[in-house]
Length: 281
Image (cartoon, rainbow, N blue to C red; front, side, top):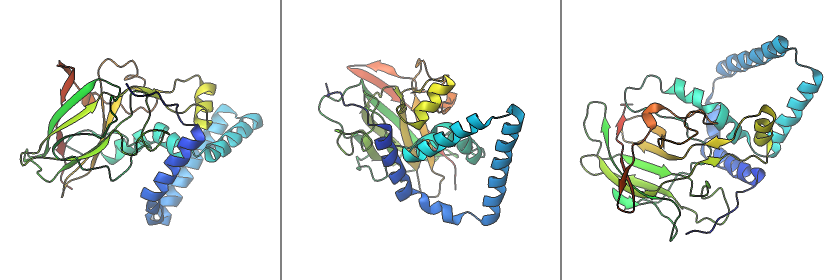
């Protein structure tokens, strides 16, 4: 079995997520037209103003909010806050037109460039990696049923301690992260381990909000994927396991019935089949 690693402090994990966002996606900010920025900013502020009036927010409550917002920045937890409590609605709106697979949030722990593993392979993992061995087979096709032979499937997920490589100390760089190609018929086979449920970091600003509101911090066990093919829309999704107690109250509101797997017992582990259907771009 693997050694148990301590979860990183919120500030450490938040700093990693913030740095990753800046390197991967920050350029998109400059592409947003001023008119669109003005419209959205005014409506968000109007919604805040209406909440203040409706609930007669006091100065003590306002100052508590102000102090909390400052701490979110100091802890580097804006990616975590937005991905947990906002992204699922953005994803719902952005993909509402699709006829293929349902997607869900990316979350803050994606890292591009995971090692290529072919169409039948295993994600990199430590010797004796914790978790039930899992073999996942599937196909990638277009909405018309034609196989997408040039598709790729990027997979990443937490380990048996609920920790992600590159965001927690003591874990190899690409542990439980891999990029898979497909066969001519769009098929693939991935060997990994079943991930564990985990709590989002609770020792920082987001944790203080959770405690103050009396919420829980749990995410159900899930596999993250990005599925892409030339001429088709990128699909970002998370795949979940039936029976998890937090499928119905995921702190990130990211679970959808269409994303539930159906694991079957096999010698020494489990097998699942899950296919992807991509929409033309």
